[in-house]
Length: 145
Image 1 (tube, helix red, strand yellow):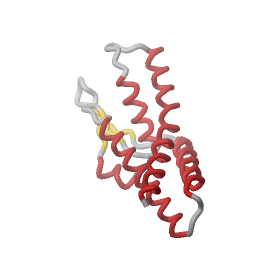
Image 2: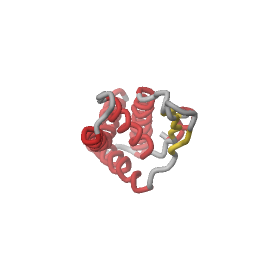
Image 3: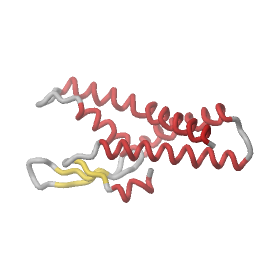
């Protein structure tokens, strides 16, 4: 059981990294070419996590700092779901290669452990990127992730 948890955590972290690195690279590239008023690299990295969350269809609530305008970003094109789907599929396949196929009960345990590890890591990323201008309703994010 501890080996299954360790492998599922490793593969969930790998899957998230595989999805997040290209998004982070693109957001850093756009940030570097567009320029920034304060030169803080945390902003594009935070934005890449937000894009990652929206790709999972997690709604974000946006507030402009200088005004009382608010809005929400709740929908990204469904093609954005392809990236997390491929990374999760790859991570789960690698997990089965490392642990073996096992019985149907073992495979169910693999799925549950992988899903819990993936959701926990993604939820922690969402907590780290919480700010005044972008909010996430965590009671909605938990069932989605």
